[in-house]
Amino acid sequence: MGLGLTLGLTGCDYLPRQVAGLQADASWGALPLRKWLSEERAEPIALSFCAPPECSPGLAVSVIRLKGRDAQITESLLKDPERLARALRSPIDRKKPVQTDVAVERLKNVPYPGFAITLSPKDGKKAPAYGAALGRRSGEDLDVVLVIGVSHEVVQQSVREVAARELGV
Image (cartoon, rainbow, N blue to C red; front, side, top):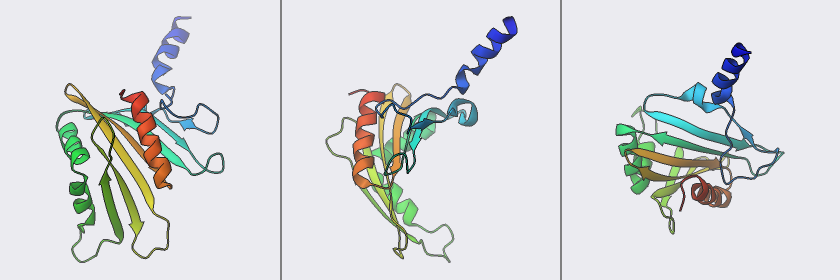
């Protein structure tokens, strides 16, 4: 019995936590991130995803907690997303041009700093990808909600709804 109780308690971190603010139905999956991705500087809190055909459009939503310098850098990007866009537009290898159009906008009418981003192939052969992020300081920590999907409207609506539940208003 002692071994079973020990295994049961140590296995709790393997149980996935659903992101608050999303539909609680079978179309949404959750990943047990704590044991897979936890590092000294970032702590994954939750990740949920829904892929077609169960739901359309597909969407991935995560909540992470950043500390130290990573929290400072991320907070500055949440407040000034054009810095991120400039970095993404700059080619790493100067001989090869960036093949992606990048557009960012600050989110308006939200209680925390954040932005929306659109990444589109320059050749237009694939649909754009959309993302959004909102973050809230909690002492030295920065809690961030990230949403990625294929619909601009759904991404922006989802980041607001999840942030209201996960970060509070």
